[in-house]
Length: 362
Image 1: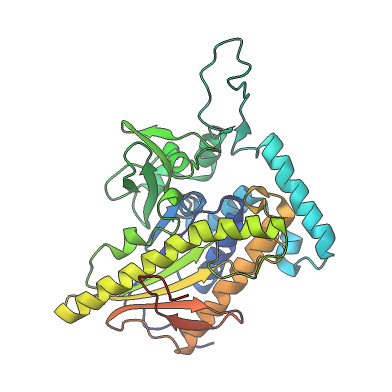
Image 2 (image 1 turned 45 degrees about the horizontal axis):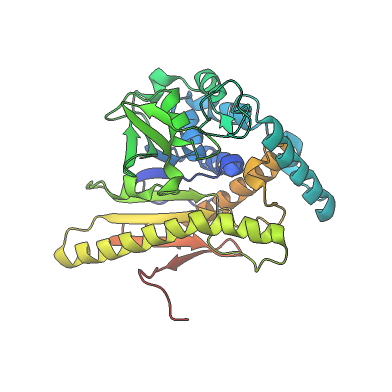
C-alpha cells in the first residue's frame, strides 16, 4: 500500500452537529485510527463535540470502544450492511425516531413534564425545552477521562453560542478546563434542549451559528501546513424531494449545510487576499459529508436505533477510507500555498471545489 504523504503537517479533525447522525463520525474516525493518522487537534459542535471529547479523552486503545459504547451500533450490520426492503426500513426508522421523541434516549436526554400555559395548577415555571439533557453528564463522565482530555494531547475545542448576545464561543483545552457541562452546552439545540449556564453566560448549541466549526481551526496561524478533515453530517447536495418527509429532511440539511458552504467560501476569499500579500499558510481541507442518506427519514436526527447507528458508522468508515486512499495515491497534494478544498463526489472521488460568496444567477 502506498505511504501517506510526508507527515510534515498538522492534522486537524473538525466534526459537525447532527444529533443521532453522529455515528457516521465514529466510523470516519475509525478509518483514521486504523490508518495510524491521529489528529493533533479536534474541534466539534453539538454531537461533534461529544464524539471529539470521547476521542481526545480516551486512551488510544479505548477510543473506538468508547465511541461504540455511546452509539451502541449493531456490530454485524456495521460490517455487512443492511439489505432489507426500503419500505420496511423506512417504517422501522420512523418508528425508532418516534420512540425517541416520546421516551428520550437513555443516558442522553429524557422528556420533561410539560404543563403549558393552559394547564398549570402548580404555577411551575414554563420549561425552556422539550427534553432534559442532564443525563448526558453522567454518560460523559463514564466515557471521558476529563484529566486526559484537558492535558491537551490532542488539543480539543468545543463551540457554542451565547443565547443572549448571539456571540460565538469556543471552549478550548489550551485556555479552559472542559467538563461535561461544556459538552452539554455545545449540544443544547433549542427548543429541544435547555441552554446551559457556563461562566455566567447562557450557552446553546454551536450549530445554531456554525454547524461545521471550521473557523476555530482556520482562524489560527501556524508555520506548518494544515490538513483539515472536516466531517459533515448534513449534506449540501441532495436529490429532489418527492414526498413530504423527503422535503422535511432536505430542509434540515440545507439549514445547516448552507452555513458550511458560506464559511468555506469566505475563507477562500480571505486566503486569496493573504496569498496576494504573501502571508498565506498552506491549508488543505478534505470535506467529507454524509451524502448517502437514501434510507434516512425526516426524523433521522432522533433515530438512535442500533441498526441505524451501524449503517451510518459503516458509511462513515467507507467514505473516509476512500478519501485516505486518494491521499495515499498522491493525487492530492498537501502543503501547497493557500487554501485548497476537496469534496467527495457521488462516486467517492475527491474533487477540488471553489465556492462563491454571492448567489448564483437564476
